[in-house]
Length: 217
Image (cartoon, rainbow, N blue to C red; front, side):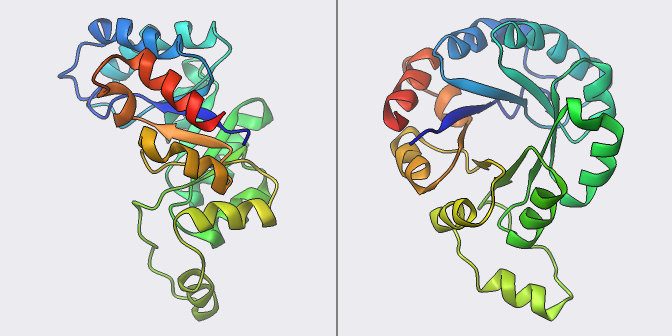
């Protein structure tokens, strides 16, 4: 196993109800646990000022540790704020985002459980594809594509299939618990996405990260 951690910030951080300054200490504790390659500022901000404050607070302490800092979907803002790239939730946005950002920025794509979308963006040059079993297949008109998708592997088998077929790294985006992190790593996830397991750990976020690193070592 050579998996690394892909950390998502709490789901409510951009809601405007959570004080990012108060969260900062917990965030630093998580980063200090080690083994984190990328952080995604998760979700959509309720307003531009909330997003700006979160990026200005968290991005510097992330990048100074040589950890990539991404935001969701808004690739124009990602570039304007000096982020390392963008995480797209729509494979159809990949071409436009890549043309805008160029090759110096990370462009990753959450493909849900769609092997078809993953192949398309992987061959087009996505820096990573993310598989997310919480997202159902989209409506598919082409009967050949629908048969390919519906007859394909799901869950952990999807990660293994990708590793045998394609070269871009894959992220398992299933909001993984510490207990199953090892299984996802063994199945072929290059990056293990963590969120709830870190921010809701009964001890602290450092302990959560350390426990995951031990599990996937």
